[in-house]
Image (cartoon, rainbow, N blue to C red; front, side, top):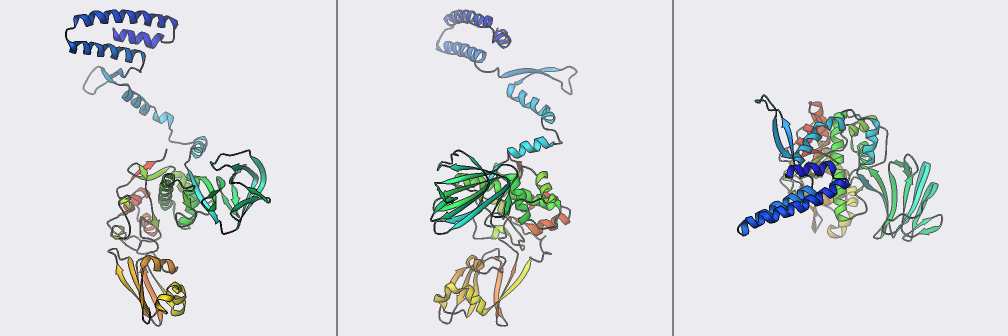
Length: 473
């Protein structure tokens, strides 16, 4: 009886006749229910009957029928069998059967354009001017710009069109053509790309005040951002396969920073310097664009989110898991427990740099009051990975201890934290291994792995253990 009513509901649910029929059947069901309840003895029987009645009404008039009956052929059966399965499972099965129609293997230009429209937006900090400084920012575009003043809540006001746009920052205020702008502006190229201080960028721009500074931010699609980053973070002349490795690593890093900034509520996601990833605007290098296109939307994932895919030029064979001054708890994929030996043939694997005493004293002038003049320098502590932790600067009477990272920041020619130092022929000589922070992907190691026949997926799994490939929505 329930199945009969259900079929009537699906066939005539929008007709006036069916509404009248439902009212009539409802009365009939209520009368039958009263008789049934009178016949059932005890409290348990009443509860069961009420549950049956309630179930019938809910699934007949409210929710979609949760089950469907299909015919399925089994290998050991000569005739199809009728199988009852959930409607959700049935829908998923149908979807998978039609997937090749919805998502063809060959993607046409229209689909690519639609993907670009839906691309994740990265906010890149291009310039910053604090309240004690002055600056002039100049924007140009072949087709001009649409300029929209912004309120403090980023609500755009009435727009104007200009051929170019120049703003001046002075006395912690923003000026355009001598008139003070209250908060900030949004700058959108009418077509194509825009240029900021002579460098071309995809996307649009925004100038806004944050704390005691004015920020110039480039809002750019993630794929365009990765394409631009590859020009400065990759190496000229390297093959497509290794650039696919870099594209996925840069995209993963960028997506991670977008999510991180949303939690901290910063107005930008990344800086355009090597504090994050060096970003110097758009370009037209075919091999880099091809690497991005072939890996579009692919990132490395861990626990359902993009990873912090750090990388350096040459790791120098350092085992990252042995680095003491780093918290691996939230990023265990960076704690690689084995060494990379593929970068040994690189010229950056080992290096040496020397300083004259006079030059070295100038570089360490901030410690002149502590030691007067430098007489000697010693490394007094390294971690298990071989990275310098503490250095002693010795003067005629006193000495001072500084961190290895502090010394590294003062000496631009020193390429990594893995070094030794001594005096030779009246000079201070540093010898070390690697170029960078020794974490994540080793670029020169990846280059050698491509020479040895590894593909981009194998290389990424080697440098980031226990991660998987995922596609951004």
